[in-house]
Amino acid sequence: METAVREVREETGIDGRAVSKLGGVRYVYTWQGERIFKVVTFFLLRPIRGRLGDLPEGMEHEVAEVRWFPLEDAGTRLSYHGEREMAAKALAALTEGE
Image (cartoon, rainbow, N blue to C red; front, side, top):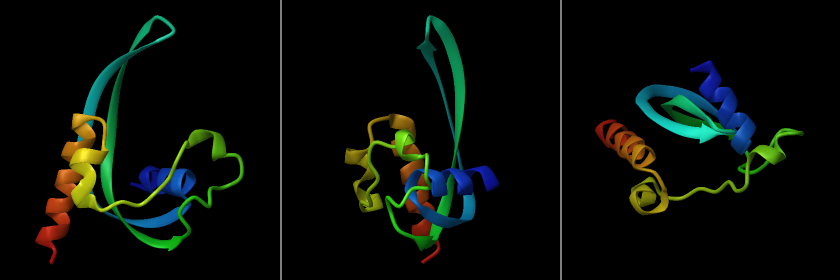
């Protein structure tokens, strides 16, 4: 979870507290003619402090755009099925906690 918290800080400018692990997405892509097998693990984090887009120096090249949007909109805003599935899990986890 420490890696997830660090990555969120580096790529969004937000410090967060890890709440739970949501799951993982596996996929394959080709890079420079080589097949790459990748697993991305998703965590639910709660924001603690920071300003969205206030990236640490040197991280600007990693991120094209950072913005908030309602989690309920993830089904139409996110490009990949696995990401939409993780957003649905996050929404369910947050709804259960209410």
